[in-house]
Structure formats: C-alpha cells, structure tokens
Amino acid sequence: MKSRQRLYINIDHVATVRQARHGEEPVPVHAVALCERAGADGITAHLREDRRHMQDADIEAIAAAVTSVFNLEMACTDEMIALAERLRPYQVTLVPERREEITTEGGLDVAGGAARIGPALRRLSKAGIRTSLFIDADRPSISRSHDLGADSIELHTGRYAQAPHDPGTIAALQEGAALGVSLGLAVHAGHGLTTANVGPVAAIPEIEELNIGHHVISRAIFVGIERAIHELRAAMDAASTSP
Image 1 (cartoon, one colour):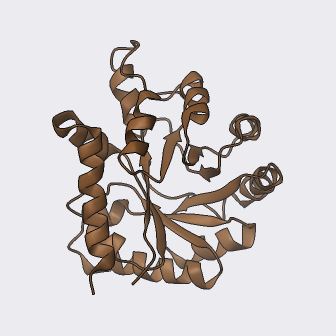
Image 2: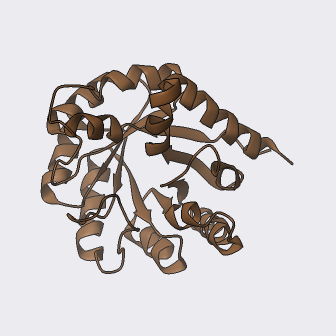
C-alpha cells in the first residue's frame, strides 16, 4: 500500500469570486483555517502577474496564517522571486502564465525557459525554499526539470481531466510519474481534478501530492468547504488504498 497522498487546497477561486465585483468579500485568508481543519495537508495560492484574483495583501496574509505548509505558485520573474525570498513559503511552484488565458493551459516550457528557470531555482533553494515546476507529463520536460535542479515536479493533469476515459491520458501520467521518481524527483499533480475523476490519478503510487482548487470552491458553494474537502479526501483515499 502506498503512503498517504497529500492534498493541498488551492484557494485562488475564493479571490476570483471577490474580484468579480472588486469588493472586499469573500476574503481568501479566511479559507485557510477551514481547509486545514478539514484535513488539507497544505495551502496553495497563485499570485499572477496581472493580479487577476489573488492580491499581494492576500498572499501576505495567507503566508502568515498557514499552519500546515504554504505552496506559492508564481511565474518565473524577478518580481515574484524577490517576493518569495521575502515571504519564505515552504514551497514555490513555478508555472507558466499568459495574460489572455482563463486558466493555466499547459506546463512550463522547461527547455525554452532554462536560462531563466535554472537561476530562479538556485535563488529559491538558497533561500531555503523547496522548488517545483509545473510541467506536462512528457519525458523531455521531466528530464530537463531534473537537470535544472528542481526538487519536485507537478504534472499537469488538464489533458486527463478533459478526457478521463482515454487510456492514453492516464498512461502519460503514470509513465511520467515513474520517470520522475526514477530521476530522484518528488512528483505532484494537479489541474482540473474533481471528486469524480481524481481516482485514477490518486492511484498512481509515485504521486505524493495533489493540488486541487476550482472543484473544491465550486462544490463548497453548495455543501461548504469542509464537506467538499472531506468528499475529495475520501475519493483519493479509496483510490490509493484499493488493490
């Protein structure tokens, strides 16, 4: 039986609701204690360059409030690296950003961005911050992530989420996770995962951690955030402990 898979809750979409009216509520940091009480192993938040949802003050408040671990998602820019060096989250996950996208559409171009990513990883490591790269589950991206010195990789599960019944999408994640572990990388996964589709991903033994946000906040509208997390955790545990 594999070790218990960690669940990090991404609370970005609390801020998305607030920013729909550019008002004061809901307040993202108020979700931290609720998520942790419900069993979240960590909190994830993404500060985008265009500040479309999370704002700098949100990230400051979240970093101070988290009692588990804080995973800060951000672009590989000098501004964001400097912010991370100041706040010292447990982990930074470098992610791609395009201004016109609705949500992150794919993994980092690790080869094309190596000249920026490598020095960024070294700066973060020097600050005592664990590093992760959000990448597609392909051999070149995984191998290059290892070569650049990342501590971990987060496999983009968006293609699987869009076609969960296509055996090729889960096979790519299985093969990518196995390769990552063989290279000494910790393997995480996330994007588009829900209680309904998380099972096959949670069952991959090499994947230590899942980052899930939009589904939890969506479900919380109807049942509350704590129940939404309990449901998700139950689905993960059932899949990871099944023979």
